[in-house]
Image (tube, helix red, strand yellow):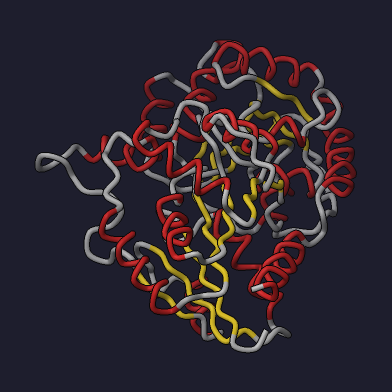
Length: 392
């Protein structure tokens, strides 16, 4: 491995997100391997973020691809912030790839890494970057952390994107749903693809179930961004008279652009006993105080919050978005609904009727996770990268 160079391109729009965990944890498995350099490329990098500080302390090189303007450009002057925010996720604002792609091309041409890893937020938001590797004949690996049923590639991009996917050394997906949807969106079979899990931050050990059964506490954990996470669907269900009358609390853990909108929606609909405590990294404490997880997502990859909750012995009520129903055994380790108000209400009603079994279901969920989730997926991923670099 002497003199080898690895480049990682991350398409995450936030300072740090769940899509960063796989490559970041995999780098920790490289300690005993002699790689000359690791370079992280990202449109904008918050060098003060603890994770990037940690990477810099390990001599990882950080380079920005679009430090001045970011990924998107406003069209015809000012654009409403809401449209910009939606555009970040579903493409209403036109992609302005030219500058960061051109900058990446020059970097790769001069530095000639032995392998490039492209970590995508969705299943094609990094393919313009990956295509530069193809042009330069540099081996590359693609990881997709989400695929969205209602967000398809534009016609003018399909040709180069298809070729880029097919000629990757490997295309990784975090759920079978995401892989299948990507194949359907591009009309191809990806023989060079594989499903890989993200690393989990907690051990698979059930936390003591709350002893208070007079009031059932559900945790909705995830970014407060309704177009993906669907918290608005849940609030509309909770606005129904039967749910208002029941002894239940729902806590929305997380931060995000839609926090105030969700608070105001709950106030307008008269939904009580819902709380927005913000982000919580203390998972054991969180689940020690809650009986179950609820995820009303519209789109997902495979949420770490689901795996973490099940690992700690909590059953889940979740929609079928992404790989959720690949993990949940309906009626045994949790309940699966469609991401609509009516069906979520029906499945929540079913779960409520069986609330006396939630503790047992949580234990089964923990046992199930232990069987299907590898203990250290980042080591498996690191081994693949190391072997790929060695081949180079």
